[in-house]
Image (cartoon, rainbow, N blue to C red; front, top):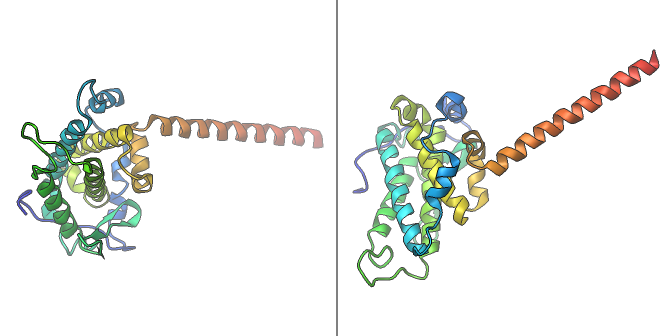
Length: 246
């Protein structure tokens, strides 16, 4: 557990009445939707500069995201224990199972799951054969798939922070940092399609609230306008029918 110093805390059991069911949407309140960079700056942040190696670019962002997720989780880790968080869950009671090296699925408590995640990532990014730092050492052919796995696992940790520990994150004044980390992660994902959409749907409402997926925001606004237009036409028809009856 050399990836950070800390322990872990609280989360609702599956279907439990824990207050985290309320906390899970606390992150959508307008007063906590703070982040430091607008969407355009985030797009510039993750766009691959001309002439730069793609794998080198992915490696840089992956390590940065690991550091920031690790920082936020480390700050609230004392609140995440096997008792308070018996399952590794995200919003909407999404439960994450750990897959070991043999592919066996295991349900573990959130702190254990996150320990596995952070240990795996720390070991991976420290491996010179995977994340080379020395001149002439090359990235493995499987590098992109390894990055996809790391980013997906970091998304799970972020999802757990929002679902189970956003109240603690807010009390510590780390919500804007978490929002920015989430924004960075999603910008990287949208730029290079790193995570299966079935994984990211649980925080789609937060993406929209933060204005991270402009297409989704515009689609939602268009749907609202269409519904209002249909309601208006329906009301107009009812009024006309009423006039004819009289």
